[in-house]
Amino acid sequence: MAHSKALLVLENFIDGKFVPCSSYIDSYNPSTGDVYCRVPDSGKEEVEAAVKAARNAFPIWSSKSPLERSQILNKLADLIEHDLEAFAQAESKDQGKTIMFARTVDIPRAVHNFRFFASSILHHTTECTEMATMGCVHYTSRAPVGVAGLISPWNLPLYLLTWKIAPAIACGNTVVAKPSEMTSVTAWMMCKLLEKAGVPHGVVNVVFGTGAKAGEALVCHPDVPLISFTGSTLTAQRITEKSAPHCKRLSLELGGKNPAIVFDDADLTQCIPTTLRSSFANQGEICLCTSRIFVQRGIYSEFLKRFVAEAKKWKVGNPSDPTVDVGALISKEHLEKVRSYVKKAQAEGARVLCGEGVDSLALPTGNQKGYFMLPTVIAEVKDESCCMQEEIFGPVTCVVAFDTEEEVIERANSVKYGLAATVWSSNVGRVHRVAQRLQSGLVWTNCWLVRDLNLPFGGMKASGIGREGAKDSYEFFTEVKTITIKH
Ligand code: NAD
Image (cartoon, rainbow, N blue to C red; front, side, top):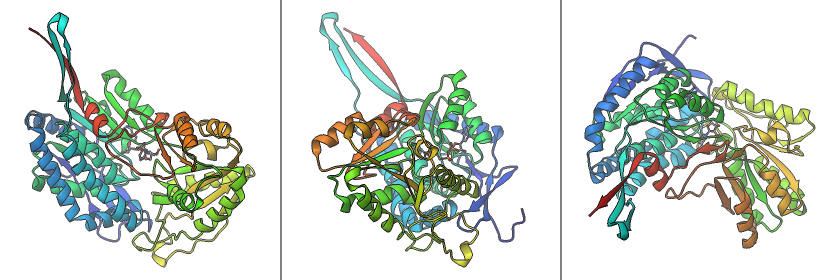
């Protein structure tokens, strides 16, 4: 492809230095459809160099005290925060998300990830038991594991990458990270700050490139004993197979098909705006996004009318416009895939109430070739339809009616995924009953995406294996040993 304007060219970050790569791949600006950046197309050789640097850095980094590491993480958080606007602009351009979302969610959370683990690493305790009759005490000790392989997706690029880097290095591991080839820019920008923050060379290495080449080289590397992966269930299956010969420790944060259950006693003034956000925020490209809304029959018509009227108000357009609510989807291929679900639903007899194929989308001149789509609401979809079973990962949500509590629990659970659910009701007893029975790693009642990073995050069934959070990440990124002392 011909490149008219000067392109941004990224380099791998290995052993504290930026190193060029022998080949590159194009990265697109989703809001214009233009190639604007070139990303290293790393493979085995680059991964080998990065793992070597991480191994060499491990003895010194792992022997630092938690306090020393904590101070460095805090410094890095300060430096990213200082450049928050530049990071937000870059994330919005690279990913297609709105500048407002990048400014208020992605980058602040990346900063918070470092601060949070800088603090939590200071507060862990280990276990001790006494066996008086045997004259023994037992205690556990925890040590960093070694070189951690970190693989992240394109939807929340720096946010999710730092959610892995921060606990990994806080615990004393060194890392080789591979961000998504479609959204590599903010990881590269972060590398520029590592030295100033005091992160020693080799502690954080970043190799850019595709999953098939760079990702798999990392997964298969014998000197990388643990892989923390966030991405699709399909890729996780491949990673599981490839890492099996090495018995690697895996944390897998995967897709979802998240239900919202709206009972007839729900406060719709809160439920409707929140469910619009949970369906369409970040173009619906959040693993926690709602894509099946079950509404109790008594309020179904009213809910639908109000929900559709509000969905139509969401402004789609240039992501750098601060008044825009929905930016561009990540790629042309992804846009086509998301659109194809709407067509399938129509072919099956469902009703598209607003958005794709129903309303027209007017885009600014510079964005005509961008990957945009209107928030789309589909009703009367059968539970067995692919739109109700598969992860669409775009601004599309299905609304269906239900009658009883028992029925809705069964229908909400009847998918292969189990990541996040929301329950809307003013009946506390019901909220508890339903939350207990939903097959879902996270259940939000009368809210969405309110997170306490102390608590476990992760999914059931095809949504993942393992949990992340203060204690859970500490356990994943450390090896525990039980020591017995007899006097
Ligand atoms: P993806 O699985 O295609 O890619 C994720 C990462 O894995 C990328 O860096 C990619 O290059 C790499 N990869 C691809 N093939 C690989 C291989 N064979 N070996 C090693 N690495 C490989 O996912 P995506 O399309 O980037 O992201 C969207 C998916 O991520 C959705 O399913 C979404 O639900 C999920 N997700 C889950 C969470 C969560 O916390 N549960 C959060 C965000 C996104």
